[in-house]
Length: 252
Image 1 (cartoon, rainbow, N blue to C red):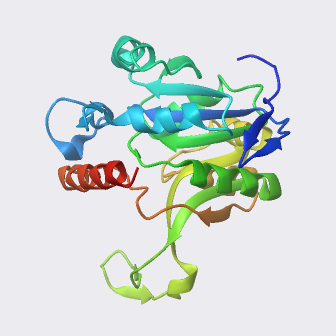
Image 2: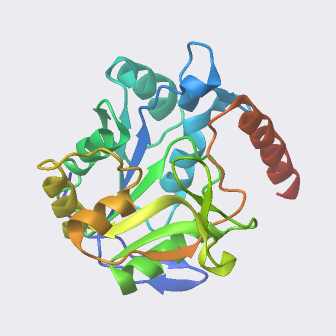
């Protein structure tokens, strides 16, 4: 990665004098076993383009992102370069890295390629409805808190169960959020946390915020994402995504 600083740009008619360098790690190495079929979910067709294209395009166009590392399966690197990066002119994608067995392994591979970044935005490639508004809120939050994650307040009452599926606790709904990506961190914090993680049992690690909570001894702030910022995990999700994309095109 280059070491030049973030660019000056115009946001809302005002000059943005951002000096921090911001990198995005897009994780697209999942197998998508719940989808069925042989095609990985991040490459499924959505509106005539591979699913992962939409997150990459948003980051490409963002005022808050200087460079992108795409992490995918080793067998998909050539496809991504040819059919996504080059085809759609995604020039901010500086490197395509081979991911690991688990999501945290893939993120770690991406972080190794962001050594110069002041802030790192980690995003799931299977979340196609990332927006500039989410990135803006996240950028402002990470400047203040050093570690933050997109999310939305839970619409449902949540029950905490024991191993026998008996209710042991009902947390206050106003304190329960559903976590999304991007999850954004000061570069030194997230790299150090992942370095430490390699020394411990990773069982139970489900997201990057948890790595920082456990390994970085640092509070993670939640900022407002978007209820439309869904993750495509099942065929039903893909149907919803098609409807959301159609509505977004109509609104433009």
